[in-house]
Every structure is written in structure tokens, then in C-alpha cells.
Image (cartoon, rainbow, N blue to C red; front, side, top):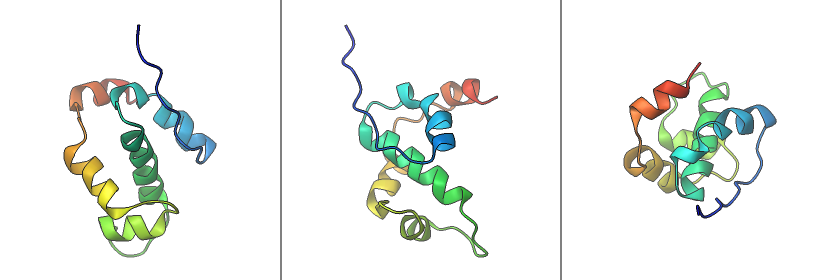
Length: 86
């Protein structure tokens, strides 16, 4: 029997719906939260390049170190992610 996953804090409805399709690929709630924060940061308008530091500053509640961990250390399985993208 699988352990139920802890829910992430709600963000924009469209982001939550999109990310919900990928939640089962990330075991930790911190990874699922960072996915949402990262996508929100990428979608926010900005004239300059979006560095990780800037993304963390732009997105409320985001932490640079956690975003770094998500991008660098989270268990990315590119094939599993690619199969789900429409």
C-alpha cells in the first residue's frame, strides 16, 4: 500500500493542474513545491535573463537553495517527463 503524498500549498489553478500530472514523479513535497515555483518564475514577465537567484526573488515563498536543489539533485527522469507533455 502506497503512502499518501503530502499536498503542496496551492498556487495558481492552472499551475496546480499542470504540475499535478507530474506530482507522482517527485517523491518529496519540497520537490513538488519547487516545480511549481520554478514554473511560475519562468512564466513571470522579465526583460532580463532569469537566473536562479532572480527566480527565487520573483516568486513569493521561493528559496534559492531549494530551487537549486530541485534543478540539480531532484530525481529527474527525462523520458518519464517527456511522455506526459502533450
